Image 1 (cartoon, rainbow, N blue to C red):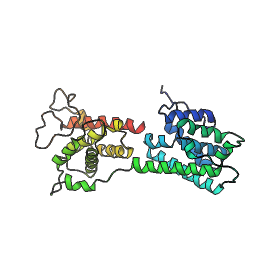
Image 2: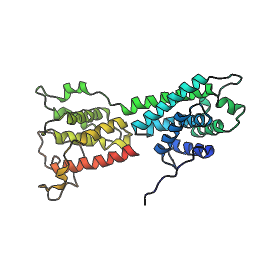
Image 3: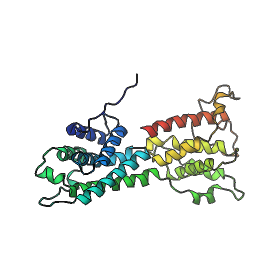
Image 4: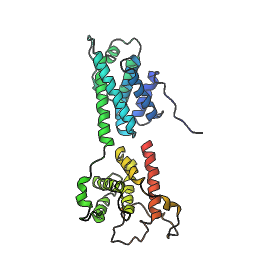
Length: 308
């Protein structure tokens, strides 16, 4: 039997506020993507209504969690669009005046941000709560939320250009210059991603997708695997991991099921930069079965990362 995270009743504002605060601290009780998806849908359904306004506060309180933790581009896009829809509706509704809006900086920690959900969602709100629920104030929350989420889409789901690296990684006759590529990959020595090594892996992924010659593919696949292995430790941007996965999906995995000349297999061969072309492959790093096993393992590993 599959364990399922409990559904949060989004109309139970105190419970929802508590869950949002826990999620922002990194200890969600419910399933964050599922909950955030419902919140975004409810903002979109009625951005100007009482419940839609409370859900906007919930989305605003969740915006940095979404920015750094959600790896689903479609979900982030949908949440950004919900915030933009709310901003347009609330700006059109305007402010009746007669009160001062709370400063956004007044709610700068998860508990304070979550408290706005209860304040805005409370029926018959008066005083400070009435000002917090004012369309003029909520339009600012919506704009702040949309800005954070659009920033996430640019920063987390874009992939750096690597065309300029052709001058370094391609020979005059169009082959991969593996000595230069491997030199850059060897910079990756610790858990924190080395940016030059990452650029080499991104270039390698694009080379695989561009139908690289068969003789180049094992080394290129290992190059991609090497940096993909570090996605958890370094919180690699989902857009980059998605490119790695797309490139590795082009690798033939059938050798996993076929015998090879290495009777003891490859358990002692740790993932590292691929061997240089002039160096004998004494450990069987380029063995088709070993490469297929490594690619299969990294695809599973990154699938978990993208779903987390």
